[in-house]
Length: 321
Ligand code: F6P
Image (tube, rainbow, N blue to C red; front, side):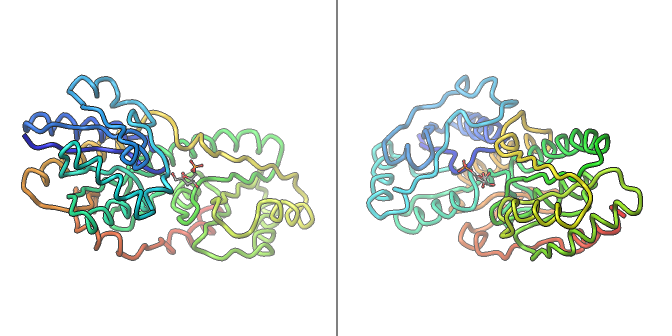
């Protein structure tokens, strides 16, 4: 009987559980034995492995987080760590490994396949949307909806008090959460790591908004932007007439029940992983392009250049006029 492993790694994201469920149930349906590895690569090194059954993944579809737990493993980045991880796979006779995680996690899977000939299948599980081969990652839709809800609530109170609010969102290297929530939340200014920002220009926009009768100003700042929030606050206080408040959304963005889109993406990616394993097609990264589930060679997928939607970014000025 074919034995497969599944793990979640890196920052958790809503929809990871839906992906685990699809992988486990599809695999069992096709007569495979499934092993869940706890705490990502950390658990693989430590040998934290448990057999998963149909009922092991009951009642998890709607839950945020990951039942398998997750970690960012430094040890896995070392030769010894990776060799230990491989020993665990050998011990359980696992030849195919499904990895649900972001850029770093899928890169780890790729290296494992290159060094030890383990067959790997990467599912894009991260709220950051920082994997270029897929239009969306599992958890991104839920995260931006959570941010949108926060923006909507913050707008109410900042209008009443005529304030400027800086809302800090996640994204160390990728500003997609900031950009998409900013556009759909009606922000005047979006600060993202991919685009340099000019503090004088930001103050100018805030002042223009005040002059044109705006009741509040909303600035969305991705955490990876080089200009620090304190610097921005000081500049706004010095150059504009409004009181400034900072709201850091932090882990609020990573939790919560996955949306329809995230559940669907997670489920379809999980199904595709098992289809690929059955067909003997190895080392794939699975994702979504133009509404269809796609898979690419994992090494090629991770090399694809990331695009930023500059037109959308430029549109913010007009949309928030
Ligand atoms: O999951 C990705 C991410 O959410 C980033 O946007 C963020 O910078 C990071 O994780 C923080 O995660 P942690 O504090 O768990 O290391």
